[in-house]
Amino acid sequence: MIVILKDNPDRQQLDGLIRWLGDQQIEVHPTVGVHQTILGLIGDTSRIDIDLISALEIVEDVKRVQEPYKNANRKFHPDDTVIRVGDVQIGDGSLTLFAGPCSVESEEQIVGIARAVKKSGAAILRGGAFKPRTSPYAFQGMGDEGLHLLLKAKEATGLPICTEIMDASQLPLFEDIDILQVGARNMQNFALLKALGKTNKPVLLKRGMASSYQDLLMSAEYILAGGNPNVILCERGIRTFETYTRNTLDLSCIPALKTLSHLPVIIDPSHAAGKSALVPSLARAAAAGGADGLLIEVHNDPAHALCDGPQSITPKVFDALAPQLRQIHDLVRGEQTDVIIR
Image (tube, rainbow, N blue to C red; front, side, top):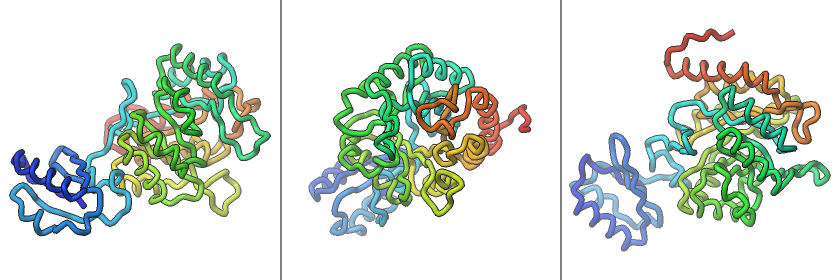
């Protein structure tokens, strides 16, 4: 249930309403927007009399929310959520570029790629230290040493770090990491999601390979319900009958999720395509579709990458692609630009 308040509500009446709801075992989440203030009510609201609340002078309207996700619901939080990571803002209307290799392989590799993508305009360095792989015989990442090398790359470039966490027990290792990524395979690892809800670190939550929008938003709800408001939704392609691409990129998720939720939505064209030649086109399409950011795999030597080389683009390709993505994004938003798309 949501309670929409009138402008400048009487503080005494508002405090009285919140106390009364608390006595009814209802949790109240106030959201102060640009144009209105909303109280999101979470709990067993079936026994709450809508007419009783509607009769209060400070109340504009009362509505029941049917969707099972509450904190992630745009009805509870009409304004877009903006995630702040250092000087970077995700979801503020700009296009945030995450770039880097699938896996950290050496100090020279990760620092070199970090410097290259920053020069091209990336705002966040992505790279895997722990890698959940389909095969137990595939490269599983460098682990603790990989995290150490990521922090060296951050020290060298100033770029915030986004890397995947696989288990709640790893949280102490990720103390200095800026954004914790939850991979598609762990989207419904509820123990992990609950643990991340108790932190205040931004969480990049990837959509599962066969998950609906509601599945994704319910996973986000676990983190939000724990008290952590810093969730970024990520579409990385879903599994369909098509075998030419690694996954099928669902670009309709951008307007759909933005209608359903206030959380930022970013797109990972690399895991969707599985082929580097397709990544630029999918990235451009995502920028045109209104994505808040893109997560792109960049490797200095894809042919010899230890993980997902076929879907990684080179720093040179990323350097040419990045300004195109920003231009497309700005054009769609109606902003002026002097660059010509070729």
